Image (cartoon, rainbow, N blue to C red; front, top):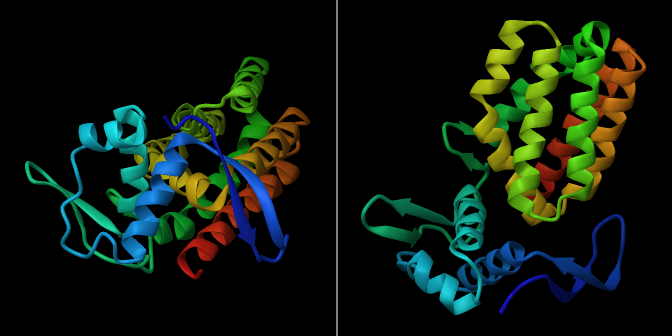
Length: 239
């Protein structure tokens, strides 16, 4: 049965090189297995994948873990789920963008800096102590959270809370509208690019700037966070 799995991997990116032992979640392990099989041609284009229940039994995990892995496969453009028919392999390589339901990753990348950077600045300027405490509680929960799906939900809550703290209902509404796409993107980048730990650090920096009531620092911290997300997306799509 897959729980947390330790894999030996070769890393040759700009930060590290050589072999390292890395800890991956059950969903990451299932996703990696499916992605490798698809890209290697063991699951050719047109293949209908086994049902969620069968995949869960095959990998010894829950159906929610399988769904998480399949969502990332779909976001990368490798699979497509057709209502009433099942999930099919539609490509053997990652597409030029992430499909995140109603919006694409590129659309989020282009839009979010114009929304969330000024929202963070206004949040630092207008926040109440109760709102700051809410952000502290969210960040603390994210630091402790080991379940990837629960962490993604907290991530979306963090960004929605900042938009609400801005006191600007337009920012609040827009972030609410893109919340599901943001969560889907976060889930995929965590799984494919290992973003979670870095995001935790970046969220703490945003929180610290809002605690200090510094609009400039809060805006800059949010800008750096979104730039890091964009860089991770580029690595995924151009690997």
